[in-house]
Image 1 (tube, rainbow, N blue to C red):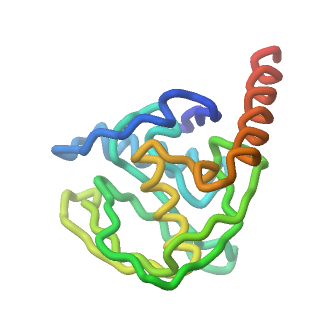
Image 2: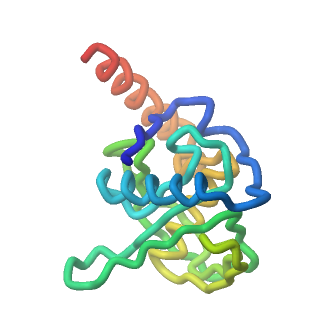
Length: 172
């Protein structure tokens, strides 16, 4: 089931999310809904707070080539365990900040730990776009948006555009 995506500014996007103590069928269903919502948007990542759920859950799939099989990932309680000194700059966007993009510098490689859909601990290293995406989504769980990395003027400009978009959508 597709879920509505919150648009910035929304106080729920700035909340630090609660850890997930135990997996349930309800949480697995939520993860499925999030993947469906993400693919439909279309996007490459989605965090639970973006659909109004303040729990530590993200989904992502950075495969963009139609010839390549999708690689959906579901991560409960993800955390960055290690990050490289080497940095990467990507033009980031966000489903909660539609049609706005900006270059953000982040560690090029990160090692992430999480719990999978079966409750098993997992650990993997991510590089390039995957590393950027997982860091972007984990930021959401900590109440941080990609625009928080920008200079105040640019951030305010984007926020005003989102406020205008929300007013326009409310009128429809």
